[in-house]
Amino acid sequence: MDDETKRHWALIRTLPGIEWSGRTRYAAAMFFYQRGQMDAETLEIYRICSRLDAEDPVSVLKSHHLGADWISRMETESDRP
Image (tube, rainbow, N blue to C red; front, side, top):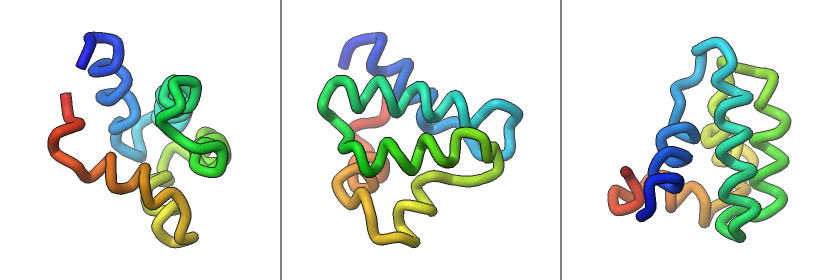
């Protein structure tokens, strides 16, 4: 995994509740979307959550039964930087 990808994995895992964390996660989500690693539906959840710093987009995805592939990637240890 290259350094840029590692950096974006760290950003997309920014904890909820931190000021600007929603926007940080959304920026990282856009990186993965542009690389074809995230679908548009999942990106939309990150966009909606971008103004909600306390909201965890992965929890929203799970509650709406969306983004199963992405959730799996987030939970896979091998993808962690």
